[in-house]
Image (cartoon, rainbow, N blue to C red):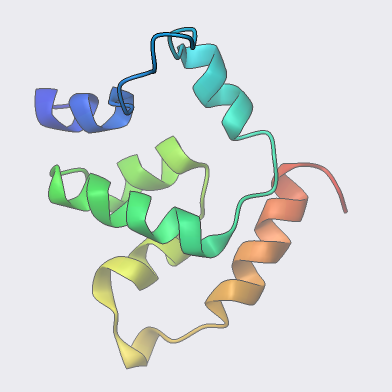
Length: 97
């Protein structure tokens, strides 16, 4: 990946003095809970602006290609029940189903 993409993937807001530094383990732990689609979409757009490809974004955020591509293309021809698909994939990703 390019440096710009890596920077976006690893950049976090500066921690307060009383907080411990964020680690990659913290980022991995964040993926182990059920996310909201409204929180994931801005992250997809952020990675897109940094130059990441759809497959890279899908892998990083543990999403399907279809959902990432839906956000990137915003095409009515590609309309799917995005929220429904996302919720099913989240349950499957977390082995809730």
